[in-house]
Image (cartoon, rainbow, N blue to C red):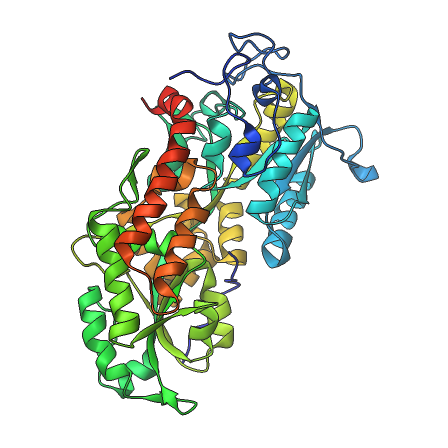
Length: 475
């Protein structure tokens, strides 16, 4: 039988100051300037905060007001904490339920999630809020967005807020460490995912393939010759669907072919494994006829029009609900190396908020990091477990034991690593790479080297703009 895990759902050279700052508008991908003093809540060029006693070990602050919040009558008189969220639908409901649970667990703080649209819409709203001088207390930021605000000195260092009972040891280290810059944490993981290889077990059995994912891209090509002998709706069944509107999976393939998109801000997409991966995919699509560029690879796989694809861990429940066949998942294929990127979101605090608000906001993050609450989030959304002890919570432990597909994502985590810097820190880095991918995957495919040469030049121009702030943090 097709497994049905409990509640797993689909989702989805100087620091800037008054004298020298990068526009936060550019960081969020919008074209409006930002006053440098609004970003970190500084009152002079040394970065001294304008308020708060700083006893928690975070930076002082205080010149940024709070966005509008109207607590229900039963919570009036508490310290208000506003979280700006990029989660709607089922995930948003799960988050709201956890915050209501927090509100009922104590009598001092009221926390509220305010949906601001998906990441590419919510980040520019934060830019506008910083300019206006009134911000949320907790900001949900994608893994490819928080670093852009970091470079503009807008994020609160979190290290001083942790204690002996709540610290790095509670978390899956690989996920926690993505928010570290040197020894300081600026972004705390929460809704995290990796790509998985999905395959149609019924198709694999029908053509006599092993009940597993291919170990390499070369093995996928060999298997594809058998898969495409089948037909669906009168047409040869395609073996693999590629995604052209997300560079996440392509970055994984670049690593698997031994390359990178960048080394730090040194762009490498026009050489080595990136070009090799692009050329391999292009040949697989146009020369072999085994693959194609899908509008929604996960949807196509779930409806049975393609035998395999690569998409997020968070897509598992949606695929289960759509599929009329037995679904299998596997580690991502290698070629010359392993390549498993992490994705998803986490939380940051805003540097310029008052110390009282920052202290209250961190209490919310501590609550979400309790094992029972972290397990509740994973079960409700399908995101990876991020708190080690959450996997011992009985309901999540049963889900991991009963559904090997979901457990694959946990087993693959030791191979995972954070995105290449050009994708994470350059404001339009992802959009430039995606535009290039669509050119090589579509309409017969343009010359891979030529396309990536153009993309690399654009990325290098952007990298020069952010290099001074990046080097302040990363050397």
